[in-house]
Amino acid sequence: MGEDGVFKKVIFDARCLILDTRPKTIMRKNKKRHPIRDTRHPNIIAIVGPSASGKTSLANTLAKKLGKNHTAIISQDQYYKDWSHLPFKKRGKINFDSPGSFDFRMITAMLRRLQRWEVVEVPQYSYKLHKRLKIKKRMLPKRYIIVEGLLVLHKKSIRDLFNLKIYVDVDKATSLARRITRDLKSRGETIESVCKRYFEDVLPMQEKYVEPQKKWANFVLNGSNADYRKILDRLAQILKRR
Image (cartoon, rainbow, N blue to C red; front, side, top):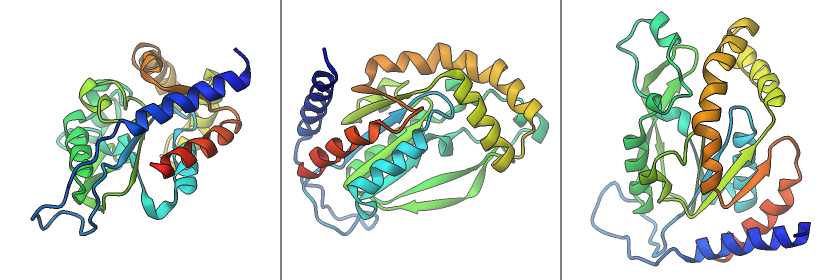
């Protein structure tokens, strides 16, 4: 199948999924419900893939094309379990790439509330302190909700909520190089600590849990280049027509 054929298949699959959302009246008497009347469920989009594959960049690009005023972006990293009861050194040894480090129940419940156009409070996580902070960020429901993270499709309970699933792939050398640059700059790590965590935690979990999520994705994008932007243009057009 040529490039054009693959492209048409991707758009066809995306169109079918988007149109599968059924209208529903969502306005009820609830002080926490967003005051805008809408009879449509939001489109919830998953962006998943290995560490430093470009998930956040893709999420921001898609949000810009859909309209930032109509789009909310949620990072799965904010839903790490609360490890504040542990000493700092023990928190630093946690395998944050393991499914057991995420609070899937909390993020699933929050997405279901956003589906009902309810206002939610998103927990905030500190990478430097390795713990959940006491502050929360208020989030209004939007027409488009993008959820990006390592293991967004791991659990069926959350996987079933998505209208569209995107897997962002990247080669391991690029992933490690990006992690070193990012973690030294914004997460208080050293080259030694980044490499140690990558080979002991990140890579084994990627091969065991992250990569198998490809089978649930509607399409796979190469995070090493920007060619996917053309596909996002078409995808955004389809979403906007819904």
